[in-house]
Length: 124
Image (spheres, rainbow, N blue to C red):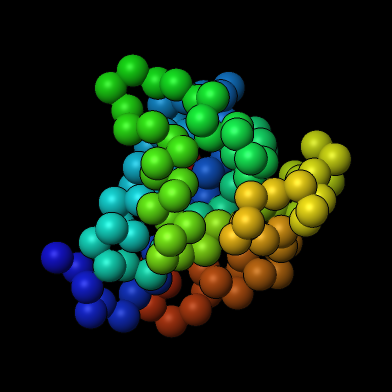
């Protein structure tokens, strides 16, 4: 559908289980874009940072929403998933703790991604 577009979608999830609908929206939009062939970068910040850990996405439930673990799998298969450096540090999460394929990076990388030509950023 959207394959071939030279744009990148950068999605920042700022909510986790504390605001489940907002969290699910971020993951759903990112996974839908990734499945459509769009280059996707999902950033986990604030409470969504917990989903960088193994098993955390599997425990998330929201009625009428696709399972978060499946959405995360789709994004990881074709895009990038990044946990915010400061958010991870505040939760005592380091690079050895996260799901394979998830990186930890900070604001400079986020700014670089969002300011790249053809990038579109969404914050949930």
